Structure formats: C-alpha cells, structure tokens
Image (cartoon, rainbow, N blue to C red; front, side):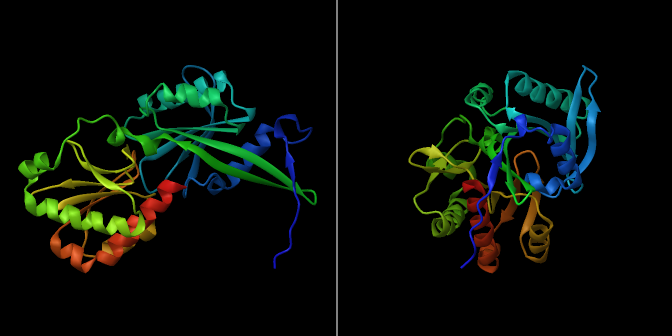
Length: 286
C-alpha cells in the first residue's frame, strides 16, 4: 500500500515569494507541464503592436499550431479575458499561415469567463487552464488542469442543417452508407448508447439527442472519410504509415485525423481503427 502524504494548497496570488514571473519561468523550462502536447517556447513577453506584451507564445514544431498564452495568478478577471482574446486576434491576423489558439491560465476560472466565452458560440478556439500549487516538505508542485477547450465544440458540431439517411443514400449511395454502418458498429464497442446523427456536411454521433462528435463520417461513393478527434502524435503517425489506411490530413484547428477507409481497409485494419476510436473517445471524455 502506498503511503499517504498530506500537502498544502498554496494561494499563489497572495504568496510572499512566488510571483507570476516565477510560474512563467517554470512553464518556459518545461512547457509539457501544461499538458498541451510537445510544445516549445517561441517567445516570452512578446511585444504587441497594439500595446502590451503576450506572456508566452508556444508552438508545436511538427505542425502549424501556435498558442497565445496569458497567465494570471488568482481569479481571471475581465481585463485578463479581453487581453487574452485581443492578443490571439492580433497574432492570427499577423501570421495567418498558422493555426492559433488562445490559452488563459489562472488559479480560478470564474463563471464570468464561461459566460463571456459562451457568447462566441465556439467560434474562437480557447483553452482555459486552472493552475493549482501544492506544497509538501518545503517543495512546491504546480498542476495545470484544462477546464475548457472550445476546439471540442467547433463548427463541425454546430447548427448544421439536418439531413436523413435518404439524403445520404442519394448523395453517396448505399455502398458507402453500409460501410458507415460497419464503422459505427465499431464505435458501439467502446462507446455504447450513441446513435448516428445525419447532417448535410457529415454524419456525426449523438447521445440523448446531443451531438458528441469525437468521431464523424463523410460517406463518398466507394469510401468513407473517418474523422477522429485525437491529439497529433508521432507514434500515431507511424502506426498509420505502417498500415494500409490512407491518411488524408491532420486538421490542426480541430484536432482531427482524417482517414479514407474502404471495405478492404476495414477488414485488414479493424484493430487499428478500433484502437483509434477508443483513443478519440477517451480524449473527448477527459
């Protein structure tokens, strides 16, 4: 049995020694503590043309994704929220060749923040991270927990015009719809209780009438484009490269692997497809 150790939660905002700069330096030393993937620090205290400084600009060296990060000790307030969104907007307009995501870090993510973000209806990619500090035996640990990631609720889950099976039969034919049904049966193994939700751009998943598109399908004439919401990782890339599956793209904005699946692929690579579906479901539920 493991020994239990009681630790003390620290109020960083009112701490006599620990400062926001100290926390920022810890992130710079090891950006992985944010749990956003294998990121590197492109710049800190980045001067903005509109005034002010962006706390951190992080990027993924293997993709075109950038993160505009604002850090605040204590509870996030209105000025912090506005500043985060403003810096994100400035950076995306200056460098449109990259995908951008606003990241706000605070010890307390308030209801005011969620109310403000809800006004944008998922149109702004925002990640909110709650920071907690624990002290034990004169040592301090920092814990970063993502409490909101609007990239999970992107336009692909928005108010698309609904469709039905007849619409897709006319558009893509029975062959690819039957293939979609077979792929959907795989999802039932790892995520029971879902049903297909027919929309005009794609066929998603729903539970109790609410869209939950950690996986969605776009039937073609002879194939189905399978989209899986999974963080981009080199290990997954290697597995897909070694398989017979055709990877169409990785969408950095919406965190989707898009894979072309035909009947032969489904038979040969069923185990890998099921593994990726399970991974998408687990990441969605975090």
